Amino acid sequence: MVMVIERQRLVLADGTTVDGYVPLPGTAPGTAVGSWLGFARGCVDITALNPPPSPGEVFRYFQTLPLPQLPTQQQPPGNALVGLPVVFYTDGPTTQTFTVDIRGFTVDIVATATGFAWHTGDGTTLTSTDPGAPYPDHTVSHDYRSGSYTASVTTTWSGTFSVDGGASADVPGTTTTDGQPVTFTVLQSSPVLTNPFD
Image (cartoon, rainbow, N blue to C red; front, side, top):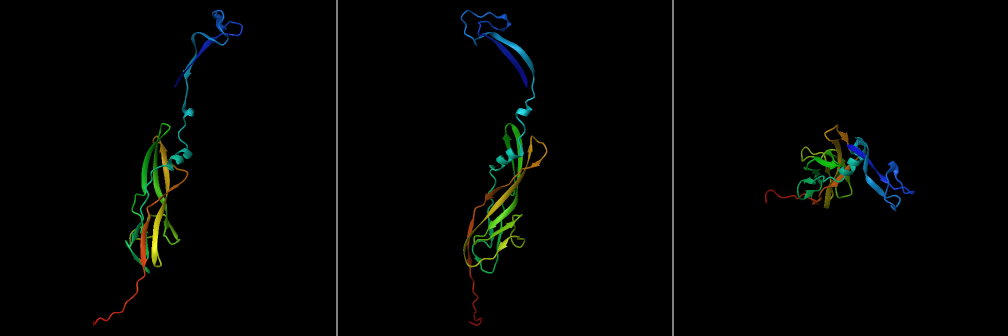
């Protein structure tokens, strides 16, 4: 940036000014007289006045991103049976990319789901680092007694960021989103003996 410094004559208390400029009689002290005078001109590096976003500043933006609220899926769908574990998983996107403007800098943020807390609805919380999977590749399941339950998943998101296409760095913190809950009933089944000849 080019900076130009100028100055202007002021009337002194004794009625005179610098540089021998003679003001009109009765001009009040401190009054500017004459035109502006060039004093200095030069280039100034303003980088320090607007530094790139700090990791902490990026984290504040990270916490406000519209991250997806991953849905809770269950197997079997609908009602379940006592003695048959309920399988949980989510099939939502686990990676999201955002581009934000922070004070004129282009910041690319990649958010990744790195933790899952499965609230089973009976006071138990299961944790995993993967989003689970449907049967038979499931990694998250829970046994229930008979009753009605509401389950949900809380997803923890970590992130990396780069400024103006530079090197990638970790976002210094995580944020969470809560998915829509699912409600289901676990039924108690009882064996019934039948006469095959009836």
